[in-house]
Length: 76
Image (cartoon, rainbow, N blue to C red; front, side, top):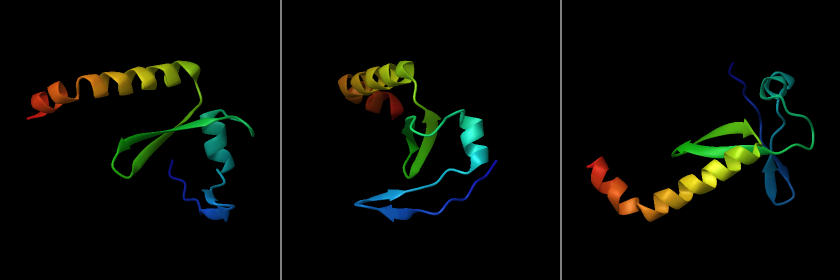
């Protein structure tokens, strides 16, 4: 599925309205939280809020910071 949405100004932020097909696919309702996870420069993945995901992302960030030099060396 591809959905195109338009951004609109809301206070000092930008807002987007999700089409009902996207809302149904995500399994979310009004007032629930979503995660925006950067997967590449300029690209984000949108997923429903999940406490386990939050914990995993925090652990990932900690490991990436702690072993940054090792990961850079492996990438060469």
